Image 1 (cartoon, helix red, strand yellow):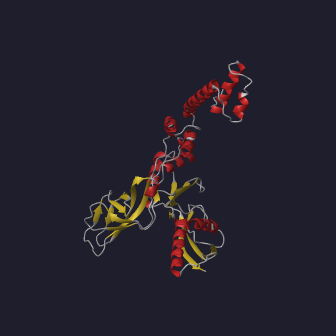
Image 2: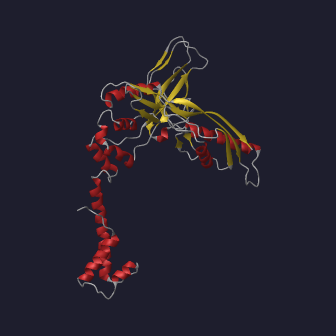
Image 3: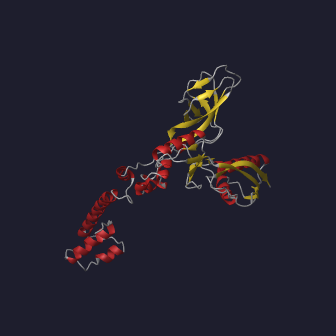
Length: 382
């Protein structure tokens, strides 16, 4: 017999019916009708039943919690973690963000090579710190070196946009400068119960090396990526192709080595690559004066236009929205749809009254191994 939780109304009514059937309280009072009509009942015994019914409801809540704690479909929080541990599947935790940082020297040429070991810390003006994962190597006579960096902390609040890193925290004997020319990638939050539940349900497939679920679980725990696409048997030899966003050389080497050691059945011929970047140009005319009693000044219009351009860049490449939430931008294989951009701009720019896209006028198709990247933006105010 399956357990079913009971609530106050049902418990209370059962008590009253039982009392009436045993003659403890009178039929004449018509208590059931009063209860159904949610009316006050001034009877000591009935009020006592109400108190006990509320107590039993609390007991049922505790029983339900224990009953569901061992079931994958219902368990939450620590109970779900405990179930996962019995299957060898831990909850994917928050991940680190990655970003490539360029270190450079201004107005000086060193006659000797510069070697700075990994672990060099840089920071944004908001004190979000990143640490180098590779050696900074600037050959004699050269001026710069670009290396992979990882956020010191984990989570989505460690994401940064291009140009954010501008300070060096570590000892800087060479007087280096630094900058990140692209947005960071990765930096996800801990998996929710429902997201985690999927992996626990499919635990036996995850432990089967080479399965789709094994790849999914690996990438769920991976630092520094915005997305990936798995293409099995993409050629006549049956090799697997994995497109990784952003797919820096550091990431691709790391992923290749880890997949062959932990996910695939043996050292397989995997093709790892970054998505091909497809230029997305946006030309549009906009109007902000419709229904305005006092039209905006030229200075105000220029400010609105600038914010629209910035919002378009966020829609395509990713970045922070006006409510300070990180928007991922276009994903691998995601088409550029002008209508979706218009909806996004409507939320971001309240002054915008209308927008007409002159290019592209229809959907710009992006293939599965491609990703759209912002190129030319031309906005005309009418």
